[in-house]
Amino acid sequence: MAMPLSEEERRSIEELEDQFANEDPELARELERGRDSSPC
Image (cartoon, rainbow, N blue to C red; front, top):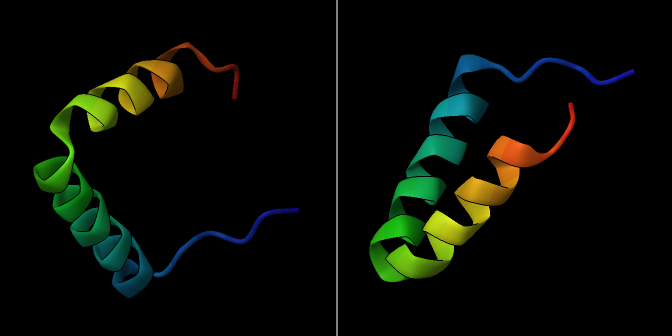
């Protein structure tokens, strides 16, 4: 069973995602598209 993330953890992940998107926007878009089509 997965534990929910704390607000601090969520913010940290969002910051990392933003940094990654700035460093490699093309790969970030590819990964985002993959996330949209994956079953969860």
